Length: 165
Image 1 (cartoon, rainbow, N blue to C red):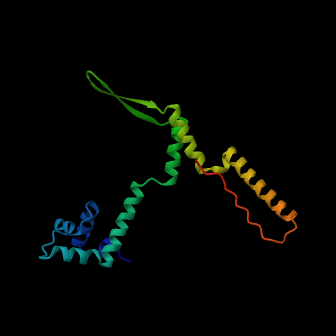
Image 2: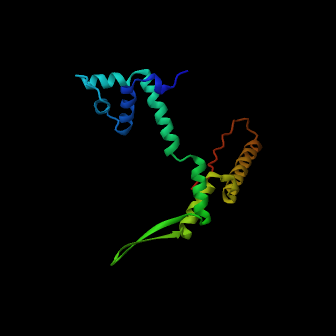
Image 3: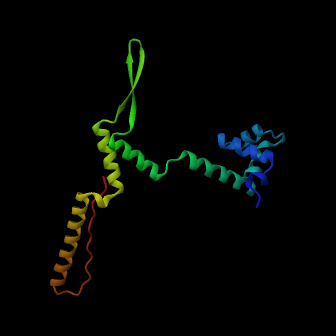
């Protein structure tokens, strides 16, 4: 199977490159070097070609993979901050100009990072576990009370689980 790049013409490839910089089809087509008398129509037509769409999607996927932080990277960053391993730049204005220095995260920032980590692992939070146990106990008690009434009615128990903060 030929690569998507080889399926597209040079004009189509350049169009996609410019379209990724500025998502305006007419501008991208002109910058790609088209001499078409009706660039708006030609750009719209090019944008709807299946091979151009596939090529654009593949380029955007590659860009996403490089630029967007995934969940593991986010957790690693939060962990480094919580442990005090990550340093931040502070800028101090002086009479002689600007002074930049590095410092480790303060306690408040480290606590916020630790809380963010715990949000992603609610079972590791003892307070959350206690609230869940309480909610389950209340539900069981309501079911027992309903059964002891001697009624054969269906009982609906609404239990509000604690929200993550």
